[in-house]
Amino acid sequence: MFTRTLLILAAASLSTHPVQASDVHGSAAKISIVFDQPLPNVPGKSMKGVLVEYGPGGSSAAHIHPKSAFIYATVLSGAIKSKVNDGPEKVYKAGENFAELPGDRHGVSANASKTKPASLLAVFVVDSDEENLVTDIDH
Image (spheres, rainbow, N blue to C red):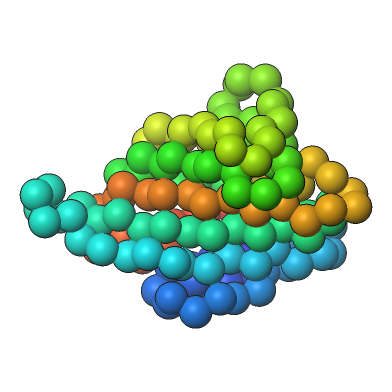
């Protein structure tokens, strides 16, 4: 199942159309590339916006992003549980944000609610030729 999710996320990084990815709990996470633009003043870098929508109880597998990626995430609706590296697991509510540095391990990314949906916008600054934005990792 992790391989399937990885392939869907990789396909999403090449498309601006929404895709569905099954998460580890069996509910769907909708992942959409909503913005992809080369940075004109930073040759070789692009900004990519990824909208992640979790159904109630939805989550993503533990993962890393490309070594070139700096990520700024803002919770748009609901509440998102997140754990980066060895830091504490935190719940971010709508309007709150967090960052991931190149090489960070995102061990937990999940909807904090079992009854309401949640969404976040992750903005990547990444090498322009990077095609795979997410790599699942084993615990």
